[in-house]
Amino acid sequence: MTLTNNTRKIALVASETNIAQEAAAALEKRYDFVPVNEADVIVALGGDGFMLHLIHEIMPHRASIFGMNRGTVGFLLNNFRPDNLIRRINASTPITLYPLRMMAETEDGAQIQALAINEVSLLRQTRQTAKIRILVDGKIRMEELVCDGILLSTPAGSTAYNLSAHGPIIPMNAEIMAMTPISAFRPRRWKGALLPQNSKVTFEIIDPEKRPVSAVADIKEARHITRVSIEQDRSIKVNLLFDSHHTLEERILNEQFAD
Image: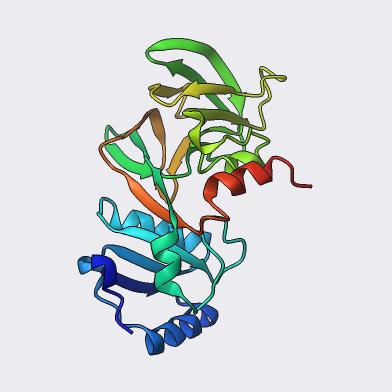
């Protein structure tokens, strides 16, 4: 069966796990797919980790991604069903994500850029706690945070590392970001902040030689940093497709009432 009806050209990618490869083989017997670089829609088989890597591999790419879960949690994916694939894609609800752009400066003067769909996190590299100064839009908001780390999360990433660090779950249309400390020691009771999505956040590392810190944008790490600036990059967008009865907004809303 051709997958080019309604002018959509559809590609298929899968993680290397047995369950994903078996699902890909089943779909390839039923449908004709095009190469990824020709596709309008990419069907992705795997888990959330595979989806995150795929998004980074194709950014910026005009193709939308319709993921089907062949992993563990599958928060960013739809349920796997080989039947009616074209109908599901055509009836799906799109969600547009804008990544965070991280600019990290290291002790040796290097500048490292990376994009993040979920979050940018700062983490101590040694047994000693990190000391971090926080600026928002150029204004110092906290002179010194003593902690294991801190992260800045998008709404899409608010149910990932941010949630594990006891940060708030953010609805997709809230147009805010979550700044969440990781094991804060001082100020002991500070739980973080919610910021407008157009904010520019800067983290400055205090005494980086004695208290080294790394920065991670989703899957890319920069070590021995001295300063990190983060802001949303609206020149790049990622379109994910979800079954209309189980959209990403609905999943995030459900997470707020989960056990």
